Image (cartoon, rainbow, N blue to C red):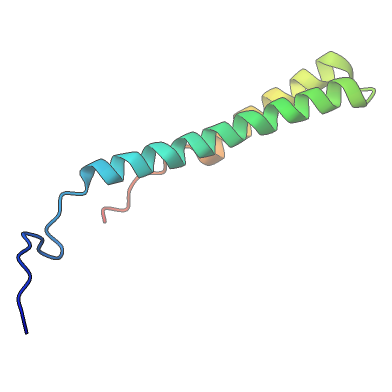
Length: 79
């Protein structure tokens, strides 16, 4: 069997760039989804119900605070 003339060795590639790109993408997806959900809830409550501006604003702020608390970065388990 012929050997390939490659410098690639399985498991020895530096993947820090891919890890940082993945972490950026997942973070933007997570926080972007929260912001869109808050905006959607605010606009629906303001324009489509009798809650009015203040009721929609209070609900949106509560949703934002809960989202931040639930979606923030958890401490690592040391893995």
